[in-house]
Length: 260
Image 1 (cartoon, rainbow, N blue to C red):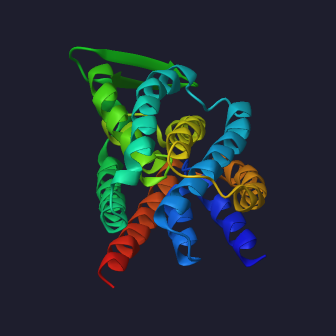
Image 2: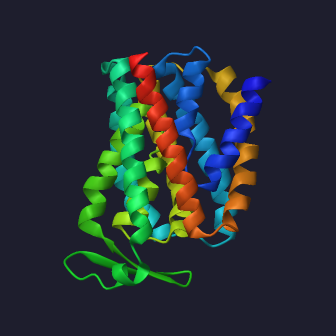
């Protein structure tokens, strides 16, 4: 009952900020005594459910940029499958350290995006720019940047058992100029797909604890519905601040655990 309640609360919060929850699902499962590879596989299963559940509500609010999601997800999924497949070749301590470092790096990127205005982004010029006019918002996306960035994010997501949302949301808001609310909603679609593909790679090497996964799955589906509903009413800047705090705290915790 305790682990059910914890995962229910966590899924509410992470659905609010467009993450699948993997950045905390993995540390929680480690705290309950599961190995990193077991935790990663269960986490990816839960991420798939969380993303799908949150996406249904964001879709009704017409905040999901389908075209952007499709372009980004193709390359992310290739990376996610490869990352999931090779994850068994990496030592657990190295994966934990990499996990923590990436969370703190994502915090830095997100905090720097506070000063990036929509006007600055819209005025960009150069090769491969895709000008988007979606749901009353205008932003410019760099196609040459999307390909390597999403391949790398997908690989790391599959490797670490996370959705990649903790990197996708900062990349979309800071580098691609996507408004935070649209980035969060679009991320909810992508993290579910990335989670499923990453899980496929893991299952080639590591069996899934289906009983645990299904029990926790019920908790995160309900929580994601509640969290996504709350998020729709939040201002962009508040979403970014909350996300930055969470990323830093969890990242610092993971690095701390490597040395103690």
